[in-house]
Image 1 (cartoon, rainbow, N blue to C red):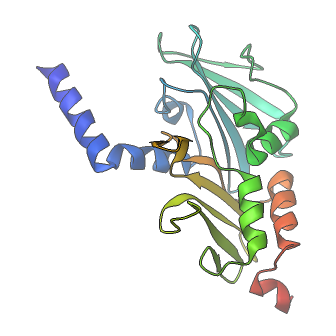
Image 2 (tube, helix red, strand yellow; image 1 turned 90 degrees about the horizontal axis):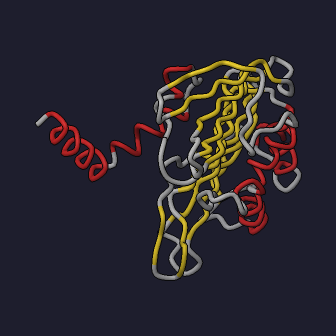
Length: 237
């Protein structure tokens, strides 16, 4: 009876969108060991870059092999070296803290890993969802289409839409540099098309979520976008 109640609750959450919102909340705050256990433990592999209040973390879901792992890489204050690696096995429920991981997706080249998540290179050929990434953002941002680009004082929001139906939003991007709090860069994929007639909604909508950060990789990509168009705050510096 208890298991039936859990299943019914799960189905209700999925139908109302609250389950998806749970993952959104999970991706917008620092990740500790308990929060790591709440990341998806079934389905496709995933990669997620988080940098909030000058702390950068990377989550890797290595789920498509028998030895499943959810991996949290905590970085030092230099944003490039590894402080520690936390692994959670969702099958055995075991959690361990270590120096590295034997996952095929793990690397000590943190700068490259962060860039691959932002550009979307890591989402190609690794059995992941098709997360909308920097290339799509850059293309839309260069179009100067007021229906897709929304400016504020410190940055921009940009929407990626279906080609023929601009009211259907595939992804939203937000980026900028707050004069007090620092840089922000966020990529949120709502859905993608596997083929012309079917769509897929990723469990984790964010591939990148950063705010109030001075992470050099985040800064590099935001500044490259500012070379295309500057926010209004840049004109009064």
